[in-house]
Amino acid sequence: MLRECDINEISDGKRYCANDMVKLGCNDCRGCHSCCEGMEDTIVLDPYDIYRLTRNLDLDFQILMQERIALHVEEGLILPHLAMSELTGACSFLNEEGRCSIHAHRPGICRLFPLGRIYENGGFSYFLQVNECVRESRTKEKVKNWIDTPRLREYEAFILKWHNYIKEMQSFLKDKADAKDWNMLHLQMFYILPYESEDFYLEFEERLVDMKRRMSV
Image (cartoon, rainbow, N blue to C red; front, side, top):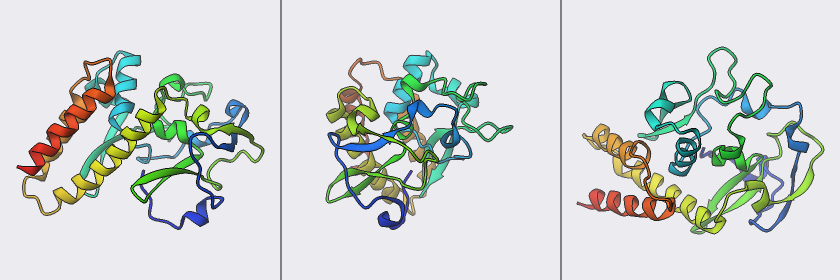
């Protein structure tokens, strides 16, 4: 979820990389799930999130759309996000014990929290959101261990490419009479069409090249 704000007001003023130690550990969130409530449409899902969910839950995108995820529009571009329960306002994947039922394959934004990403100078770094997590006492954890994602360098490269594509697509869709058709193509290409390859990053790159070719015609 992109936000326009003063980074110094929401962070400790530092930038972190994957090998840095940051106060993130919270004893596995014992007895707490505050960050899983009232998030509305802010847990935006990227293609790798959907790849992980569909493969590990053995469900396709359309099935997830029935009650687990929803769609919203950000600057003209349709994006999926985790759905919140209409009864409790909590994440639809939160179980009766208040624990994440998809923790092993949770989305990237959930893996980051309470970290965030700041995009600048053609790349991005991590920052600690100091006002988000209600836990006051936390232990130091290495960022890459906290994110807990294999092939982290490739994942980070994907995140940057996806961020740049989103910004490019949002700009591309401005004043487009056929913006709806482009949005449907965007959803089909990056979310609905299953990723058949074991190498997500390779297949994503092929789809990204194809999409940009279509945009340039």
